[in-house]
Each structure stands twice: as structure tokens, then as C-alpha cells.
Amino acid sequence: MRRRHEYRDRHEAGLRLGELLAEREWRDPLVLGLARGGVVVGHAVASVLGAPLDVAVARKIGAPGQPEFGVGAVTPDGPPCYDERSLSMLGLRPAQLADACRAERAEARRRAVVYQRGRPPQPRAGRDVLVVDDGLATGVTARAALRALRADRPHSLVFAAPVCAPDAAAALKSDADEVLCLLAPHGFRSVGQWYADFRQTGDDEVIELLETS
Image (cartoon, rainbow, N blue to C red):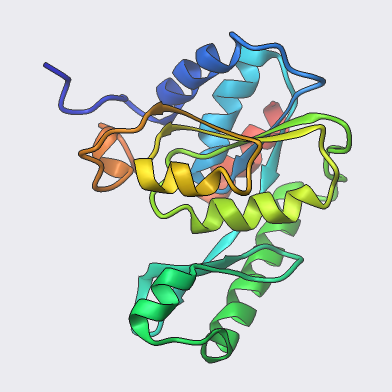
């Protein structure tokens, strides 16, 4: 019988994900943790692979009156990414979300500045770029991050997470060269259900992990 929680915390999940990724040969790999929780997982992955760690920032755009229901996402630069099925279901058009998009882009830019602390981003061109998160639910923030990173001309662009919703993982394959999940359970309800400790990751922790990687 499976344990009630598959992972003790993000660090353990990252070590196990790193073991899976270490079975492959990578070309000058770069690990990008998707802020915030993905940076904790990515830090462990990078330690296993002996690869550098950097951060990717994408912010969810919530539905009006339902901020936790992500209908899109935006990165510090580049166009927003919307889930057309969710927009259709709610009868929304992108123009109706313009204010929310601007606010989330501003927050994405703030976080990118805070996390980088004056350091230039790690170069991505010609490298295998591994975008790591603590889990994949709807996939909207991961999709926005991947589309923005494609412009940096990586050798390959891979998304990896300890646990993924099967339908979201399948849909994300149109934006990533490969999607790697330790678990893709049919009983998926939320990312947090697979962790014993899924406390929120703060900015200070992200900064510390990036500085010590």
C-alpha cells in the first residue's frame, strides 16, 4: 500500500527526481526552479546532477472573483499565456483580464529582480534546460515559463516534476521537448496531497538557495 504522502518535503522529492534525471546524459545542463516551490526541488536536482541552478518566474492569472483558479499566466517578459478551455468555460476574453495580467507581470518582474540580486541570468542558448517545479496541476504557469524560455534557444527544453496531473503532463508536451514526472497518478487532486510538508516557500528561502547553489 502506498504511503499516505509520497514525499516528506520538497527537498526529498527533488533528490528523488534528481536520481531519475541523473540516468540520462545531458548537454551542459542548467536547472531552472520555477519560483517559488520549484526552486527548493530544483536545488536538490541541481546538487544531484552537479549542475548550476537558476530561477524561472511565472505568475498565475486568476479568474475574476476566483484568484486561485488559474486561467492564464505571465512571465516578466513576453505575451501572457491563457488556457482557452478555461476561458471558454467561464465566458471570458483575454481583454477582460488585462488589469490582472498587468498586476501579475509587475509582480513577476519584482520577484525576478529580488531573486537575481543583480546577478545576470545563467546563459541558456545551446544547453539542455531543465525546468523544475514541485508539481504540475493545471500546467498554465509551466506553459508560460516554457514559451518564454524557448526564445533563449536552448538545445532542449525539458519540464520535470515529482508529481503531475496526467492530463496536464500530456498537454504540456506541445511546449516542452520532454515532460518527465516521477508520478502521474490517476487519483491526482492537488500537488500538496503528495507531500507530508508542503508549507509555502518564501522569498528569503528562494534567495538563500540560489546564493548557495
